Amino acid sequence: MDLQKIISTIDNLILKSQDGVNSVIYGNLCKMAAEFCFKNGETMDGIYYLSESQGATLRRECCYHCDLSEMKQEFNSKKPCNGLKKEYLSFISSYAKNKTKGLLCRLKEMPKEWTLIQLIRSYDPNDRHLKSIRNIFALVSELCHVWIPEPKSEEDGTVSILQLLYESVMDKSLHRRMQPLEYIRKKRKQNCEVMKSITKEITVNWLQEWSCFLLGRICDEKLEKEIKNAVDEVFCRSKLKYSCHVINKIYQIANGCAHLCEEEIELAVSETISDKSLQNKLVKQILRIKSDNPNIYWAKRYPVILLIDEKLECIPWEMIEILKNHPVSRLPSIHFVHALFKEHENTIINGNKIIKNISSGFYIVNPDLTLENTEKRIIQFLKTRFPKWCGLAGKIPSKNEFMDALIKYNILLYCGHGNGTQYFNSYDIKEIRVNALPFLFGCSSVQSKNLGGRAGFISLSHNYFISATPCILGMLWSVTNTDTDYMALILLNHWLPGKSIDITEIKGFNHQLKSFSKPTHTEPELLRVLNVARESAALFTNGCAMVVYGIPVKLEEE
Image (tube, one colour):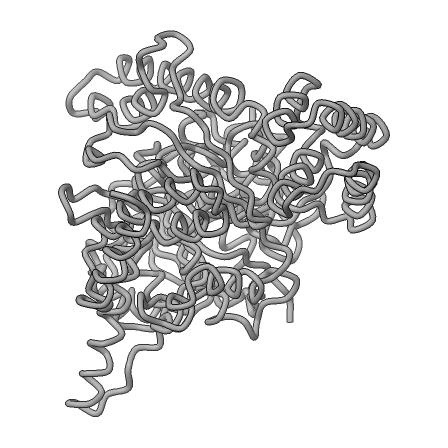
């Protein structure tokens, strides 16, 4: 099958089924089209089809929900749900019909502070199985792409590090009822070592010189301009002409040069530029940038939004060396970044959704009465740090209480088992306008589950997106309650405005973590505080589990 036949098949699929396309077939066809485009040198079209291959299942569900809401309004005179707008997600919208131009239009409309990075597997006819993971593309907002081969384990070259990761975080032998406590502790320690090894291998043995593509823009405009001008100077002296796509790749290599050794810089440049003379000049210039700016490694950067393939979501991207000190969030596809931006555009300043009235917080702690220590720690902290918050402790919330917490408050703190859907059905979330930022400190609270076959993946976060929630914090896999409590306390203590407290005064706090206990100042940007909270976890796997799905948010005192 050639490119034109694939594109024709995609267009016919949309024409016949409109917004009811089979998402798995659509996604695979788009990946096939992308590979052909890249082979033919049609880079921008390839990037467009890659962007279309993601989030198709959730896009279809959102469109269906919008149509259903309109029908309810027509027949029952009810106000439709105030969720994400169909025009930004539809397969037949003006953005979708304009294809590559529509993608560029989306990017142009969104904040310049954001860097969007797409991490996606290439097309594989057997992609229903974990073993099918072979390789990924990386797409950044500057519209660069690179091909990265399959990651292999350092210990066993035939085993994917993704398989090792999956086996460690999904280890069901860690349930206390099944094994002695001593065995569980030993196994958890082993899994932590596996996870540490994996986060190292992702950079050193997998991404290698292309790890710099994961970095966001430098906040210092002067430094960013100096880097760009230095690269432009070399290209201007050369008589050779290169596309914007190639030049953007060199910009990104220079932007992340502090995280690369000389050999990696040489490799990245040589794979981007064919002329040997220009290669040498660019490498020398980038090394000069690195030596002249010793603080570039620690330079403050704007947020990165990772658009992650469903089968790559279990990777703790936020904890790899190059990202762990920078603000990072996740979303299913560029369509949802754009839709959330449009939904909250009037309250976004400098790339951050502004959240006010922080006294408007609600907590649900230990609802099933099995986490007594959690209840003691969290409630003591909240009464000391933010006494105006209200909520439920040691009590099962009614459906209306849970719903009111999501609608009437700005923050919902949930510290219990799972993600709360045992008290408020996940389907009901789509039927309301969620105002609160859900912080779900329960096992696997935002984990994606593969339904198999052509059904695709589902996650609670998807329902929150449909209801236009700007972001949701949760756990990718099972975690221990003690570490989770510490991460919650440290995150809130560092993030909430006002006078912070010394958490060592909270009963049950681990004094070994004293360095995190009392911040010198609060940090209003949520994604920046996450880094501190993750580091406070005693078990590395627990810190890796905590992620945010959504757009960047920032607190602002009234």
